[in-house]
Length: 250
Ligand SMILES: [Zn+2]
Image (cartoon, rainbow, N blue to C red; front, side):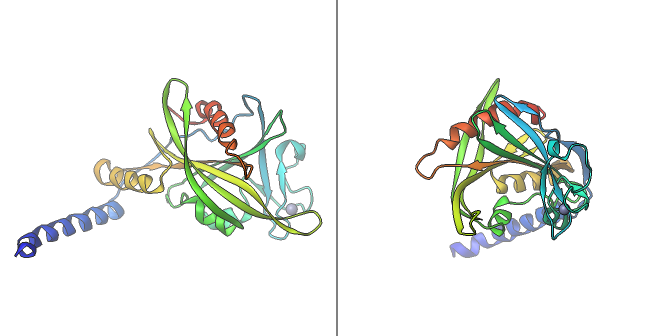
């Protein structure tokens, strides 16, 4: 009895959901060129000095360079192949209008951080959950934790930190694992979230309700951590706090 009276509502709800999905993925939307981030990583962030990275596109070489070490060379100094701001694997996997910028940051204390910004192009397929790529690159994810970052003159943001073990080969050839982390959050026009699902909901509602598709970006910060301590989080918070105003368009 109860089920019978509710049945029409289920049909209406199902139709509503299907229509929304159809609209979200078929209507013509205005693709905006405006991004929520600046694709220009600062050279200095508090005690950190940054150097942009370049990647050899020859699949058998694949060397990585700091721009400063290239001394003006525009091709790979080992094999002569072209260099790009992303790796060959990223170039092959991502839509051609995806923009990536990467910098290595060294602190006066000797610590090193890597920052990556991926900005989607027109196809909007450039940004996905970083987890898939990281696992493919020989990392195992132990934990996903939210790290709040207090900011100057605005409410704190939350970023997602994946605490991982990365398989590497030691100089003597032994396989070993080192503790690392990869922290990230997604940035659209006036929107920020550490959750992939929240970004998908915003993308769908922007398309259906506002007829617009923004260029989303993700910002990733990675480094090493210690197995017996959480102190990498303080370093990450301090870095993002100083880095944030350079990058996110308010
Ligand atoms: Zn090369």
